Image (cartoon, rainbow, N blue to C red; front, side, top):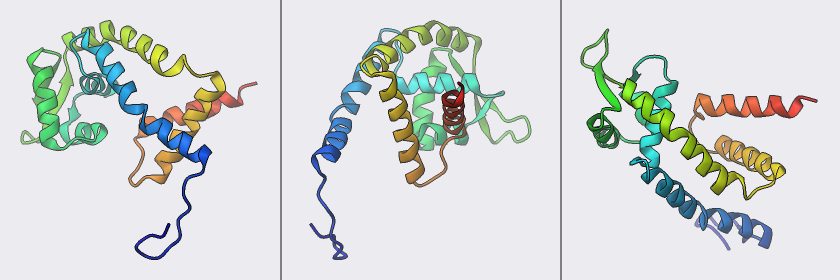
Length: 174
């Protein structure tokens, strides 16, 4: 096969095809299953991510920073937050220094909801994502996603790098 620039590109071999097709044909079903499990708690995976990111933030989070973490446009974030504001889990607050800038903050009700839902979500992640794999597979998946993240444009989120460093330190413990 050749590209438009005339470069010859090799087709995927069986091993590569298994990895690629395994990912692309599984990721949507996995996400749908995780979404279904969260639906019992009246949350989407995106809503859950918002609650987690806000719970990890020191103080209210700038909307632009939250949108970047969630890989959403400003209007996409507005729609995502509307539901969480409506349930009382999140509130929008003006920046103390610049009242034109809005921030998002997790409410006490949101913290309580996250604390209630998190054990169910972790159990879902364990059952659907981690349990089917051996420990070595989990390590390999972590390394693989770190390598893929490094090959993509843009900086990886700082928390991703902290998790990777933590995992690497754990591997070095004898």
